[in-house]
Length: 239
Image (cartoon, rainbow, N blue to C red; front, side, top):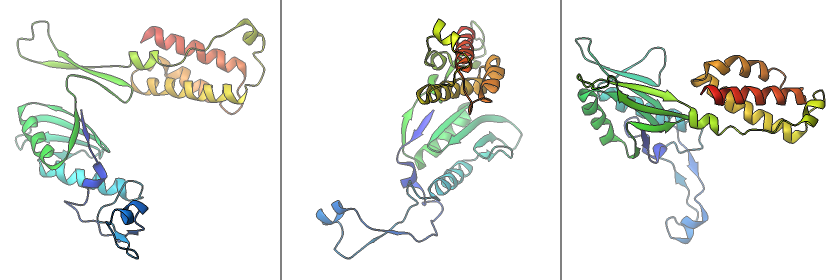
C-alpha cells in the first residue's frame, strides 16, 4: 500500500491546468516578504479545496500509470492492470485519491518503480497492513510453498470489535415502543454505519440485518436499538 504525499501539489506536471484561478495571499506572505502589497497570486496547480482539484490529480495519476505500461479497466476507472502483449497478467493497481493498492510479480515491481519516480511516496506498507477498516495479509498458499505462491486474506476482525456495545437493560426492553432521544438517534446511525460497512466489505452474514435496520432510521424506537445491538453482537461472534 502506498500513500502519496502532498498529492494535489504534484498535479499539473503531465497535464497542464488550463483554468485561470487567482487568490488573495495569506497575511503571513506579506509579513515574510513573499509578495508585495497590492499583488495577488495566480495558481499553477489545482489545490485541495477547489472543485477541479480531485479531477486534475486523478488525471495526473492516470497519465503516470498508463505511461508506465498499465491498462485501465473499462468497468472501474480507478483500476489498472499490467498485461503484456502476449496476454500475460503480471499485476494490478488500484488508485483511491492519494492511496494506492497494488500487487504483482517482478515485472510489476519494475513498473511500480517507474511510477514511484514520478510521485512522492510517504507510507509504503507490504504483506500485512490495514486499509479502510480492513486488514490485508499476504500468506503462503501452501504449507511448504514449493512454488513460492501466495494468497491474500482479508478480514475486519479488529474493525468489528471497535463497534460500540450498548447496554440493553430491562428498562430499555420495557420501553421498546418509546421514541429514541437525539443522542440515541446519533449513536444508532453511527453504529449502523459501521455495521453497514462491515456488511458491504466482508460480513455477508450482516447484510440482511444492516439493510432491515436502515429502514426505520427516521422513526426510531428503542426496539430498533435492541435489534441493532443483537446484530452487532452476532457480527462480532461470526467475524
